[in-house]
Length: 285
Image (cartoon, rainbow, N blue to C red; front, top):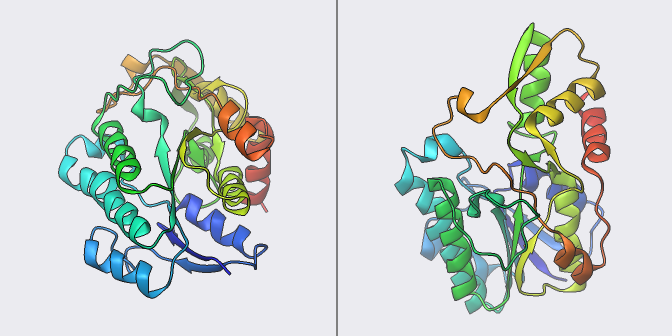
């Protein structure tokens, strides 16, 4: 029986993995967050991995406050880079696999076609730079490391765009949302299923991209959220990026090419609006 360590277990992806684990009884799970395991403590991580004979580490922990990161680079780097190195080194010493979750923000968003895994990275924010540094550290220190870059993550858990828009749509008469940033939403449940597909088949080291299928803007995403959740009283207005007070740079185009992960693990990927409908159904139960 494989022993699986999940870090950041109280976040969106961690919670989805916890739910799916109930149907994957062939593995033994250790769900941890900072209270159970401080991944910034190298010695503590090494000891935990050895003592519990960990076979697979799924790292869902990260500093994800993109704008706050601009003023907290040291903390952001500690969580997104240095702590990843602690996990990678511990995995390597224990001959374990590491599945590390990364982001579309490693690209600057100037492409016009979906990004493939081998394209040149060029992060334009502290968050993006620290996540890219974490990727490189993980690959350098762990020979059996799988990086999954994802984008626009949402779920029934934690704070995310879907839940925020549902709340604001019910409270406000009008709302402005940017229309000139293009990407693909990702339902954390779908990402969790991909993680399990990798564990079940066996982790194939390398960098992979995953989001749901299709493309949209944040404005289009919000229109779909309102329609699927029955919000009709809020007037939605399209905004240019320059009209919104972001502190950190956002990629204008961050659509990810998923060919590699689909072919490697033989998976089919849901269309983003179908997954959004499923999530909203769960939220409105």
